[in-house]
Image 1 (cartoon, rainbow, N blue to C red):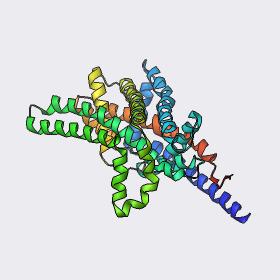
Image 2: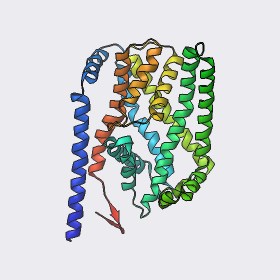
Image 3: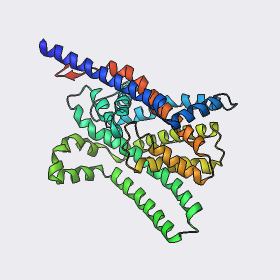
Image 4: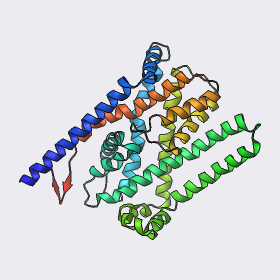
Amino acid sequence: MNINRSRKFLLAAGKALVVLLTLYLLYKAVFKAPDAFLSWGGILQEAWQSPLRPLLLVTAALIPVNWGFEALKWRLLGQKIERLSFRQAYRAVMVGLTLGFITPNRLGDYAGRVLELKSQQRLEAIGAIFLGRFCQLVATVLAGSVGLAYFILRFYWHLYPSVCLSLIFLLLALNLIVLLLLYNARAMVAVVAGIKPLRQFVPYIAVMAAYASPELTRLLLLSLSRYCVFLLQFILLLILFGVQLSAVEYICGVSGTFFLKSVVPSVSLLSDLGMRELSAMYLFGLLGQERLQVLSASLSLWLLNIAVPSAVGLFFVLRLRFARKGVTT
């Protein structure tokens, strides 16, 4: 009885800590950060009063679609551990998003999704979560390579043709490598098993070898679909904030931004906030766009797709239940 009370107290304390920390980080990001957020607030007010205001509403309406594709991915991935409904998968994604918000590089996403599972082998889901994130990275690399190639050929080819050619070959090689890794997950597991210090982690990632090529292809298509939603949201916000470009420039600028954000390591606590903004300002700066408009669109994208859903996810965090030996607490 005392043990159960202690567990319930620790669970309640843990939930309270997550809630308070998430709310604090949201407050700090939106109201306490210096010039960038203050300037963004003023531009947002102007955008809200413009004839293009419906674009903001469309972008917001795409938020559940964005995370819905992620839920479909998790439902497919999680079936190797236990059968999940779409609703259960969506809930797990939201819990993972909230816990990932308060941890560097979204590591809390693993804990959130694992905690939502009822299976006694729930820790084996770590490999499935990693595979899902890697699949999203593959989608980003495939699309982002095209975007970066556009900038390389347009702005630097006439100055450094040999260097640009080398970069193009590197991008092609990177695409080939990530695809080979995705469709040879068994090989990745085997490599980890062959390294003695890492061998203890094999039980947690062994599930990666259980996915057949058709399942991986479906995962990649879902990842590309989610990527397209995210890309469309960014483009709509860029238009809203006065960035005027051709369709090709929009697509290549956004895809290149996502690529740089994904491949460059991030140490930001706020879910990689910062790297995307720097990448966007650099690439769209090459296209002659004002830094502040691009920054405003990028910050708004983060707020809509990460901060707001993380706050909503607090509701699911508060309702977390832990299953041990068939007993729910």
